[in-house]
Image (cartoon, rainbow, N blue to C red; front, side, top):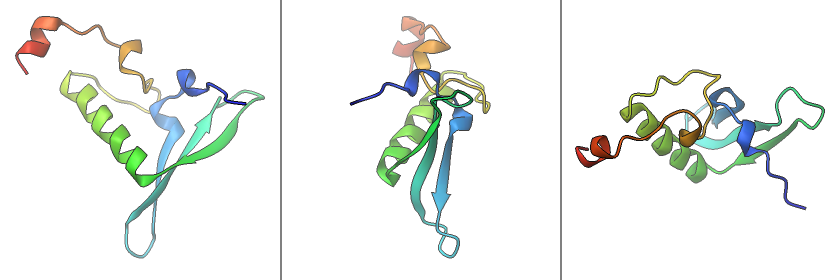
Length: 88
């Protein structure tokens, strides 16, 4: 069964995991349904985490201030101004 738990994910739910000796990114730990009875842990690959970082950097480019409580979903927090997109 596939469970859709991403809607409530915040920046604070995603933590990179690095090799202590080399500093290389190994994976990222995600807490899904944080703070509920359904809470569980899962992991994503380094490639998926890098894609998330690129996405997060785009949010910052559009003026978002990212905190640990920020939703990871861009459309949850900002309305895009089409004219602004055209100038980028």
